[in-house]
Image (cartoon, rainbow, N blue to C red; front, side, top):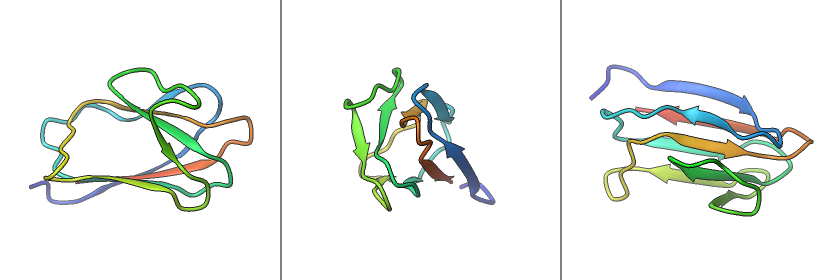
Length: 90
């Protein structure tokens, strides 16, 4: 288990971006939409609006843990308002 968590914050515009790189040691990750517009998340593929996992505005979240492990790349896209995405990884 890693000694410490990694905390990141992103502004999700209409251009997709990588929010967590592949990590073969990832055992947990939490993605939280801290903005007022929806964010769409994709796993090892480009993030596209209205596709993939939707994180609802104002607190929508997705958790990766031992029951649904994912160690690959995670991408996200928002909209022109630039909602904030908070990412935590262990």
